[in-house]
Image (tube, rainbow, N blue to C red; front, top):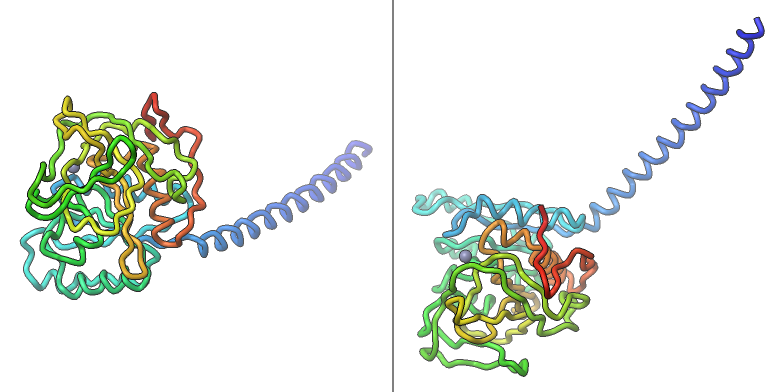
Length: 311
Ligand code: ZN
C-alpha cells in the first residue's frame, strides 16, 4: 500500500512536470514561429538569373544560392532562361518581374534577352533596384548599351572601350580604347586580393590583403568604365599569363537611383566556395539592395597567408 501511495504521488509529480515541460515547449515553439516569421519578413528577396553560360551554371547556381541563403539574410528565387537557339515563343514566357524582388543577380552569359526584359531591368535599377554581376555575367550583352553602362567593364576586345587598372600608389589608371590588352586571363591559380576602399561598407572589416581560392584572374576588361568605384584588385602576374598590373576584381557603379555591384571572381564552384568570395557576394548583395551591410566578416575569412573555403 505504502508503495502504491508513493507511486501515485510520484505519478502526480511526473504529470505536473510533464505539464510544465509541455507549456515551456509550446512557448518555445510559438516564440520560434514568431521569431522566424519576423526574420522571414526581414529577409531580402533575390532573383538569380541563369540558363545560358559558357560556364557550368548548373553547378555554380546552387553554390551561389547556398552562399546567400546560409547567411539567413536572403531568400533566393532562380529564373532560368530558355536554352540557346530556342524559338521566340519560348522567350515570350521569360518575363521576370524584377520589381517584386529586393535585388537581382546575374549568373547568365548567353543570348540577348528580349527588349521588354532589357527595358524592365533598366527601369528596375534606374528606379533604385540593386543588380549583382558574377564573373562571366559581365561577358554578356556587348550590344546592349545600358548593360555596358551598368557593368562598366566587360569581356570585350581592346577596341570596345577604355580599360582601367590601379597603380602601385592606388591611383586609377585609364588606358585608351585600342591601346593595351583586351579581355583575357591566364591559367587558374590562387591569388591575393587587395582591398582598395576599406571604408566602403562591403569592405569594412575585411583584411587589406587576403588569398583567394583557385580562380581565373580576369584582365584587360573593357567598357565605358564610367563612374566606377573600384573596391578590390588583384595583381595580374606576367608569370601567370597576366598583364603585370593591378586588375579590378570588385567594383560598383551607380545607375539612376540604383547600384550595380560586380565581382569578376567566381569561375567555378570551387572558386565560389572561397569564404572571401562568399562574404563579399553576400555583403555586396545586401548593400546593392539596401545601401547597408549587416552581414559579419566570418572568423575563418582568408588571410594574406592562406585561402579558406567552405566544404
Ligand atoms: Zn571563367
